[in-house]
Image (tube, rainbow, N blue to C red; front, top):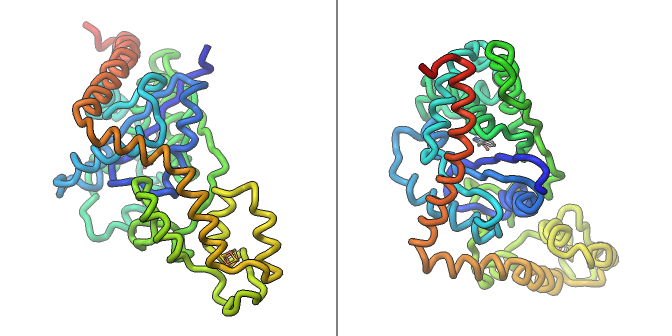
Length: 328
Ligand code: TRP
Ligand code: SF4
């Protein structure tokens, strides 16, 4: 018996990197065995900030499907689908928009931050203001109990619970109050030691081949104070060491000590890491090669996931319409 219902989603913003993988996907792969999981690519959410140019969206969705499946999400164990395939999300979003006070949305910290940051885009739109309301619909239409997300999403979950409470108060107990499921995210820097981010071009993609991984590891910044091989090193400032912590737990203590004592050279240290990383990522890479050959299978998986999601969502919507008396 699976424990409860989980929903999570990602905006289709292009191919995922190892920061995204260890921040979310790795955990989703574990959760699919224990919970009744819904994982959705939220293409409508992508429009809230990207409505002007939609030329990349289809391609981004494709990449995301392949990234998810190669990371190990298994369509036999969880439901993988596109938000726009399940129209119930839109209906519930509309109904929630009737009961959500404007002030809840305008004071949402993510709203204020994004408005300040995205000066280059006109996002003073109705749709963007309603972003958290749509997210609440994504979650509540499956009556999810828990939502695995990063800390940045906590305000949206708080709003989701507020909307659920308000709905339940007005029309009767329909919705649970979904809790965030935070995991200690393993933090990986980019290969230049800054935060891993596409805009810095310092990422390792989930799709990188073993050769690309080896090349990027060789380019990683190390402790700049080490010039000669026997100079004492400072692993805490070294990107390679941060990766060892994630990919090479078994040897990390030993590496730390030999680095500090100047007993290993950075070249050997990187070679060791590249071996561990390519080994870890080999099954991901292999699954990708298989899925890339079968675009019709990807479509089948997503369509099937969408149908399953629709069944669950339709059931909730019947209850919702009945409770609101919009079922004449
Ligand atoms: N807002 C989320 C993000 O930017 C994406 C998202 C949309 C989501 N709907 C969701 C996440 C429902 C969890 C549950 O990451
Ligand atoms: Fe980094 Fe390893 Fe070089 Fe130490 S030996 S500075 S941990 S690459």
